[in-house]
Length: 120
Image (cartoon, rainbow, N blue to C red; front, top):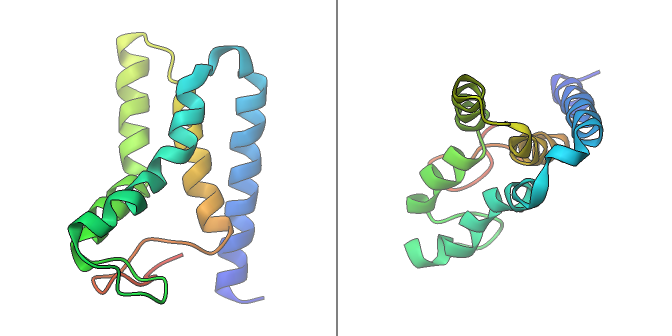
């Protein structure tokens, strides 16, 4: 089994676990969950404003930091910790975490400086 296959399997499991938690907390998710489930890819909508799309699935190099920012676990986890600390229900953030995990399970990872896939 290759390292890539192992990573994909891990992300499939993570996506499943997060989706299971979301199902258990379904009464506390609200509409923000659905917004955050698709919001990370809204960067792809504004990417053309940051430069012409180079084609072949590449992003404009100026759009890469924005895309990577919204496709890393660090931001939603930090917001989650802040929400829990403030006594606010963090459950809608599961949408964002599921989005990131599902992307990785499908083989889409962070982008490199040229706008192409860099990591799974």
